[in-house]
Length: 74
Image (cartoon, rainbow, N blue to C red; front, side, top):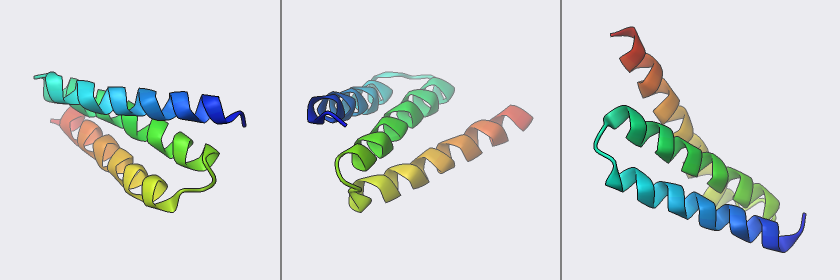
């Protein structure tokens, strides 16, 4: 993988995380935050298996999915 692409993925992940703090609708917050977490997982993989980046963002992604599905059932 080209290092510049991994860097751009990392920056886009940061952008999505910051954008999630601007939104007010909880569903949109979870979706945008989940996209950021997925980007961070990809960044961690492409940057040499950075486990301290991959593990927490992967867990947060699953938590967001859980809450999105739980809210949909209500």
